[in-house]
Length: 282
Ligand SMILES: Nc1ncnc2c1ncn2[C@@H]1O[C@H](COP(=O)(O)OP(=O)(O)OP(=O)(O)O)[C@@H](O)[C@H]1O
Image (cartoon, rainbow, N blue to C red):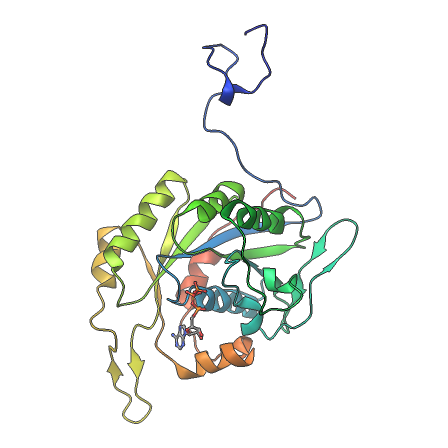
């Protein structure tokens, strides 16, 4: 070891026996009063494909199955989760940390909109500040006895999602696509990113897959033919759900009543999640 050793291996050029092997660890520590068993990141290639909606419906499905579910809204510049759940009150904080808001059915939610004075205030921050806020949602919020935390990830693979992936230990990611997207490219990118991050891809959700006509019961592929089956097979991935275009869902998001949705589209996804086990550090 060099006599000038500062124990900061990342800035040292010496070839030394004390060098700590492996990748640098950027992980952030969960609040000491928190307990989170499983963390699932919900990602999409671009905005507007329904990532927030899928995050919300996954949390609602797991809550209905008797689990304590939570949503960490990491989509800081487009936070739509509190609106979908009709949450108007602000987050409360004490000396030891911030408390998430509770939805009607008991889902814990933290979002930047719970901290801004007005939810119409835009977030005009640079990437590192945004990533810092997401990290604080992990380190400074008291997440009590959470079985499944769903993270509504910022879209894309830029600086902010990268920092979030490095800071928060995720157990799996779910990729949301829609039929009109360049699905093959997006899924390939997500799979490669997950490999780099060593996080398993739990499966794919195709949103806006079809529209079921209420008059004749026929299904129409409004956005063209779906290629999700071939792509899932190519990457050896599961299709967790195919969600139709459903005006009632859009209305529920607008009215803050997403917890009242009727439909069992996410049962296969719930079964995959239920098979996961383990507990994160408290
Ligand atoms: N299957 C669907 N049926 C009806 N409306 C839908 C469906 N999926 C999404 N929507 C509506 O589309 C809008 C965008 O959805 P959402 O906010 O979930 O997208 P997003 O991918 O999270 O977008 P962003 O990344 O820009 O926040 C919402 O108003 C939602 O109600």
